[in-house]
Every structure is written in structure tokens, then in C-alpha cells.
Length: 67
Image (cartoon, rainbow, N blue to C red; front, side, top):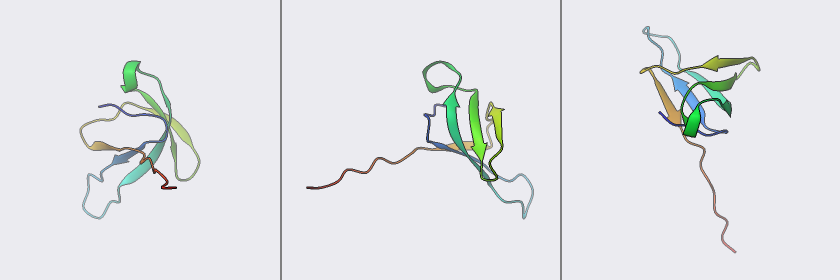
């Protein structure tokens, strides 16, 4: 798993009816984009995460503007 600052980590709910938990990668602590990551959750708190197999990285999209 590789992520960059600004990417989102999506942790899928493990129980029926449980929502996915989305956090933003604010710092990559491992070498070359690997975990652990410092993440910020939607409520503003931060944590250090080493995502498991129930997580996926949603890469930040880059938008190119046409002249």
C-alpha cells in the first residue's frame, strides 16, 4: 500500500450498517509512501494508522486546467 499527503484512506465498515470511515493522509511516516500514516478524520482528530486489508487508498486527483 502506498499513499501520499492529501490522499484519503477509506476503512470499510466490518459490520452490516456500519459506515465507511474516511480520513485524510496528512503525513507519510514510512519510506516511499508506505505506512504508517498520520491521518486526520472528518471530526478533526488525528491518529497514526497502519492500514489493514479492510482499507483502500483513494488517491488525490490532479486537475489540469485547459487554457
